[in-house]
Image 1: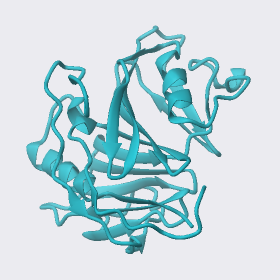
Image 2 (image 1 turned 135 degrees about the vertical axis):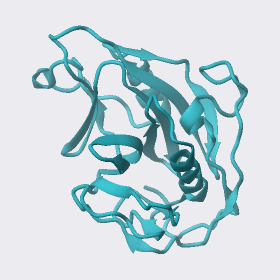
Image 3 (image 1 turned 180 degrees about the vertical axis):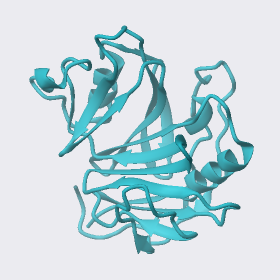
Length: 244
């Protein structure tokens, strides 16, 4: 983390590629042209309610939420949905996962991660993490993810979120049979993430003044236009700043 003062940035643009792939200077993974979402103003210091872990049981009220303990100040707005349905599945110093539940299934998801390392064998957590650990840059993490066994990865695409640059890839867990029922991607402190065979995650890795963060989204095979529109609103509202 660098700097001792907060810096106000005029706008932040989250690419619609979080849902459909691709952003910045190239075609999306599906061959469609990348489309940037509208930009939203950003306050000098994001303020709002701290996002706290509810165990996925409590619906978030509409309003602004802040990851005030994260390596960067990150805020986003939950819209007034009808019906409301965004839940916090996890919220720690290293990971914040927000889900839309359609009981008994989870449909849409967006999340923020402070990634440390990736696993040497995604099918076997007991094999430990990569040694030596990956480096601290965006390219280090993207290269590690792109070369993970048990995954199919798209080519990295350059992106910009507000004042911050990074790369976007899509990871799809391969179906290797019963010996690998779930594949593990990365570690973040005491947290980790795994995918079921066939699942895809859209991963955006950003450098926020020397602090690397990862944002990811996923959506179900059967799309819900209303929920998807809410997710776009949330992504459009994200404000990011380095902590002092």
